[in-house]
Amino acid sequence: MNVRTLCLSILYAQEASGYEIRKMCTEGECSYFVEASFGSIYPALAKLEDEGLVTSRVEHQAGKPSKKIYAITESGRAAFVDALHEPVGEDVYRSPFLLFVRFSHLLPAELVRSRIAEKLRQMDDEIAELKEMDKELKSPPADAAPTHANDAWVLRYGIAVLELARSHLSDHMDELIASAEATERSAAAAE
Image (tube, rainbow, N blue to C red; front, side, top):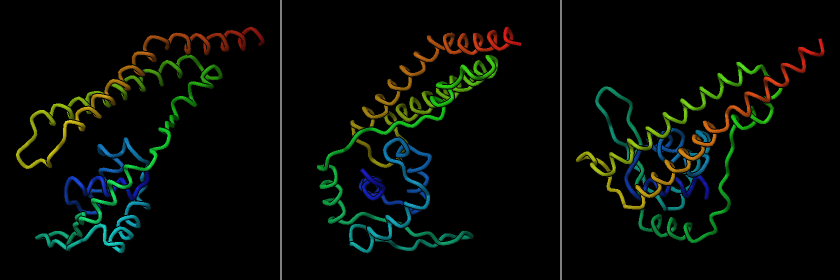
């Protein structure tokens, strides 16, 4: 999957401005699917429009700058479904926290303890956010874009993965702290 397919997926469900698409791709629910930087979304939208897969219109707003609203075309819907037929590739998981953990034995135990607590809080926040999104799917506001049962499945999958990772970290954090403490003791003994 790529940024182009991600943009089509958003527009498949609803019309959106470039800003709204960018926000969904970088901060919102679509940020979990494919890495999409600010600099890749607008060129992808321009190319999709050049290819006739999306259209755009300018919407004027009182007291605000005009915004460009994108909509998917029938050709764009077909192209999106065709893209879904392609191999999806491997999931990519990157974690600066895991790099920290890998070398946490080199750090003071208190820093390790603090970073683990911070990570646990972050995971709690992410889980709560996904659960709130799941709740909203069950009782959507009247003006919400239509959803499919698979949207809830994806959210529950994300919740399950995060809860399992959080549980593992919580259950085994003492091992990481102990390795940092052991290094501190060895360093103190060597002095």
